[in-house]
Length: 422
Image 1 (cartoon, helix red, strand yellow):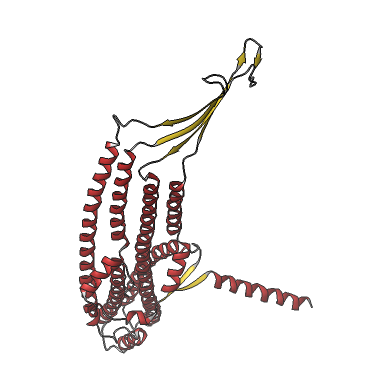
Image 2 (cartoon, one colour):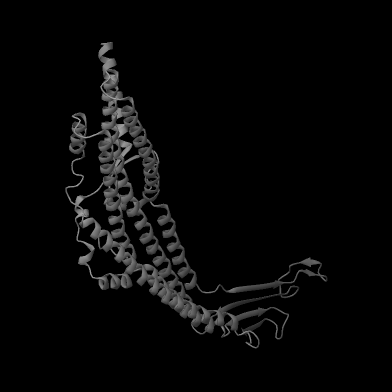
């Protein structure tokens, strides 16, 4: 019975450990990464709060001014030797209430200005999404293809280790020279060193990816790439003008620049309205300190715009309009240059990728096995073997790099056009 119980405990522990390991490894495709990014990214969450803050400005702009209440009471009556008397016979008090009324539509202009501020905050948020999403997609592709290159190294390290082991045995029987064994072991050391450097780079990519997606730092990631994405329509099928039109219609930073112009135009209207004085109307009551006693009065206050007519703020608003107009032209020029440059880069990468034989690199193990077999049969020398071995490795790594750059330039086209073309 005790033995059965022990086996049950062991089985439960192994099951729990397996489940824990599964929870700590996350298989992630690009769509899942984007979903996590939109839900968990800290910068997006913080920027979203800024929109809420801008909306709170609308609430403030809609509020009316609070009325002002004044009250004065006789503090000490020397005749009766009493404090704070309010009776008609021995006391005295007066009170008034004033309400400020804004003229020239200042309240409505303030509301419109705050509403424009909300639009600006929203466009800043959308532009942040555009920027961070590009960073996410770019990092995803770099991580995926770097992981593929790590696998290439691992396969070469495994096969080279087997070869080194076989040559050690051959060395003991005197069938091979010691220098050949040293060369193979040197190759193995170089492969491990290069793999370690690439793995350090890959870990940096994973760190950035986890930060962007809000994934726990201790979670292991396995990236999955949909092969259909590699075979999606090529860039040369999309006209440049269509990309440019998409950028002009969808780029949040250009919309932000245009909204900033609207903000400054509305601010100018508000500042001109601020030059017109507001009026303050009040009602007052005085028990005995005025004529006649039990005095009630209606009062009005209005500043005389003799010196200050808000000239400085009006000038600042006018300059703001000029600066916003220049900024729109700058954003349009920047947009055109970014689209053109990204389009040319993407075309170049697509052309280079199309020139590569699709069959290249499809069966690494077969090629390596063939090389090793021919080498063992003395059909090729050690130097030829090492050259072919290194050439295949370099070409495979270059292919992974080219695929990474090709997909990254596609992501960049999405970024510069503000749309999801790919």
